[in-house]
Amino acid sequence: MFTGIVAALGNVRSVVATPTGRRIEIEAPELLGGMVVGDSVAVNGVCLTAVDVGNGSVAVDVVQESLNRSNLGELIPGSRVDLERPMPAAGRFDGHIVQGHVDGVGTIDSIGAEGDARRIRVALPEELSRYVVEKGSITVDGVSLTVTAVGNEPWFEIVLIPHTLEVTVLGLRRIGDRVNLEVDVLAKYVERLMVK
Image (cartoon, rainbow, N blue to C red; front, side, top):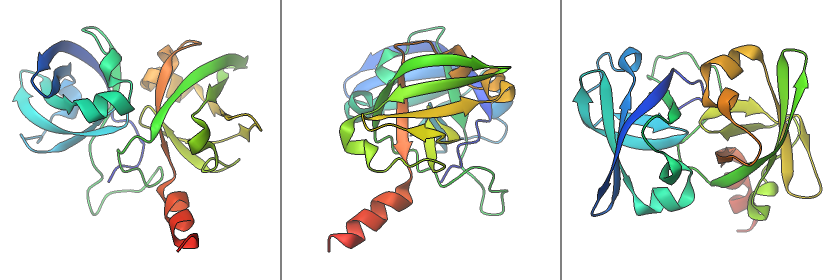
């Protein structure tokens, strides 16, 4: 389980096609202490498995299913990515429950300055809009955020403080960019229980 508190901004070193998808190597020396092959790591909010660790980088294999449901297929050498390791059992819980199971991809519709902060509007797939509520939690490219507004058309807004802009990939995003979305898993469970 993750919490949506990004630990490092990694740099994609290489992307290589494999028979089942792609192998992505990511430079992130500050994240790798104690990491071994088989450990989980979230890349832009997608839970993946480390298949090689060393020389200041971690390699992950991304299968076609994950490429289809996320923005990881758009990565090229030099791309920046948000990275998070799973929360240890005795760890501090700072964000919200994040599984690393991306529900869909949204598109940045607008970016507005609010002092040193930025208000970002994200269009999302209609089937996800029912899980997004004002003042609820959402994960955008692996970052735990609070929804500040929702629209009748499928969109929501978030406001990013300067720290978040500086230490996550969201500070690099532009209008038209695609972002990974994971809605609050609790909302999905409640919905499932209500239809039984």
